[in-house]
Amino acid sequence: MPSAVVAVTGASGARYGVRLIEELSKAGWEIDLIVSKAGDINLKLECEISSKDLAKIPGVSLHKNANLAARPASGSALYDAYVICPASGTTIGKIGAGISDNLSTRSALVAIKERRKLILVPRETPAPTPHLEAMAKLSSWGVVILPANPGFYNSPESIEDLVDFVVARILDQMGVQHNIGRRWTGDEASLG
Image (cartoon, rainbow, N blue to C red; front, side, top):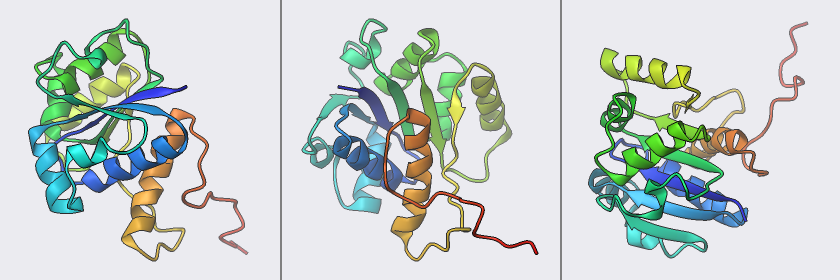
């Protein structure tokens, strides 16, 4: 069974993380979930749920962000992917500087040192120069930087459509088969 570490940190955009977890669960993935204190605040504000509610989704195991002895902190624990969604600028900055002072940052650095798939989904905007520099550095190390920037060419009709656009890109990066969003075929635009 495929498995992933999914961390929800303090950037706005908790809805992206919730939708990702729902889709991974539906696809039969095991998910080790980490939620920062600020991530839990945003889950409550933006989705009216808590990390404990997310842990009730099939296949989800919740870990305390302060627990550096949890399974995601070890390179010997095998995961198919690590995703921080949303990734706060502070989290990105810490990872770029090699700081692993919580389980979210530690698991990301484990992914980097083990050369495993790591996807960071920044949502904050505008991005300050230190965070842009950290993202460029992380990208040069093979980390996928996937900003939560939904497209509009598919004529979204709801917030859910916008969320699904971004989550579909994350799932694609993870190699997860899904049916959310519409794929570009080339027939959408006629250039004459």
